Image (cartoon, rainbow, N blue to C red):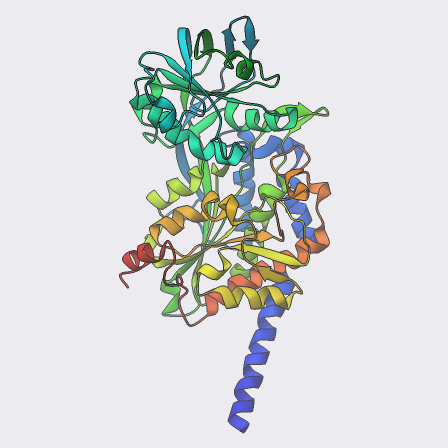
Length: 486
């Protein structure tokens, strides 16, 4: 009985010590200071490849250095150089047909195009629409999405299928017609018409000869045109697109674990620090500051770095702040192909990414129930008065839309720790990728508890005697068994 009481008392003291370690390093003033700098107008939205993105990287590297976090092994620096191919925005896009002239065109792939000739209307451009229709050497015009679902996200999910079909049928290009209000059109334009980036050799060369566009038919002129016609002559111009090589950087630091055996296992603490830069002005503001997305996530990881550097955990820690997430998860894609420590030594990736929040009583963990670390996360969050919940919007596919997925695909268990949200409602969308996502719009009292929760969860996972893994049956379980030779 006395022995049992001793173990209970010892466990209680240890748990309290861990909480005290967290509260001794995490402060609201430091959180505010970092976020206000990273999301300042002076950093102009931290666009990947920009000078401001490089300034942010140096700031993060120097912050890690000041905490005593070690640089990349066998070096004296914290920056991993990332080579990217940049494709510029078009300088001119127009479509003319039958006396109609439209210029609100969205470039799904960046191809300079000049075409005068026939275009065939094919409903939604799906397999059944090609029956008895010859599109060889012509353009296909169709409505976005399908007859059952033309919502924007669903429409995007159909683009690859439509492009593949049109190419296979011999078309020269495909134009999808949508009807968008001005705010939605502005957001789509910012996403599709800005410069794009990719990793070298990741874009197939055959894509360079095939044009794929969306066009906003706000007055439904194109749809009316095809009420009694199946084909028309069109005149398309897309010009000014140029390709170049740019260089960006991931920021990486390491803290060795305190346990002689467990220090050979590494926990990754990650976030992306880039955002989408400068875009179309909204009420005279053109800087997309990215406070929620993802200065908050970046500083969450900095808080873990400061704490673990001061109080090392049993497992080793590797802190990775990615560039290029907004360009297609490019920094993390680069990293998993160029790891500074073998991937099989990485036993967990605890990513932090955010779109916004609408419930300050919660922390939302995308993939909470998919790994054996669930209880560690739930208990840590509860210590600071929050409730941990899993993905409330599975239809959004959020697990596969952040940097964690590149680690998951290799087999590394990898959930994403996010601020509390219970749905993708207006409270999220009014800030997500908007000029309104500024540091002075955040609730720092909530962030204080949120950051403490993350840091304690990091410590609990890193100190747990059991190595975290996927729950059997998960989509990435087999990749994990292969990576770790289980």
